[in-house]
Length: 114
Image (tube, rainbow, N blue to C red; front, side, top):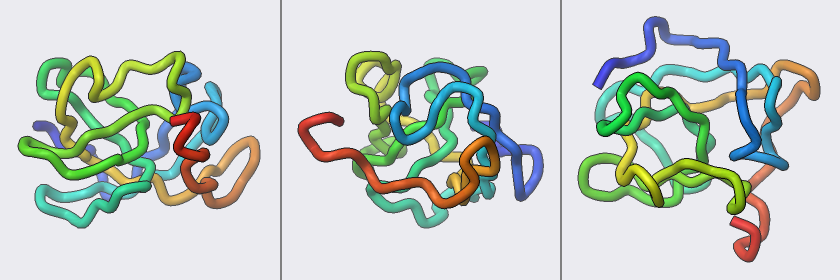
């Protein structure tokens, strides 16, 4: 699986799958995660699905699974995630939102919503 091209990457969010945590148009700063790097449940990450390697997604890690991590969007109604594509390979961890609401990302919404 292709890693991110540099240690730090600016990510522009497209689509509503992580709403309300992250919205379409948000700019995020992500740090590359090397294979075997530490990723925890609840982390917002940049990932690729082996079945769709050209697609980079921003999702929340739910758990480690065989072949990578189970990732899901925070918006259960509008998301393409591990429920559709299986395990994902995490290539970056989102550190902070840069624009339009700078700051750290909030924790996952209550379990009934995600």
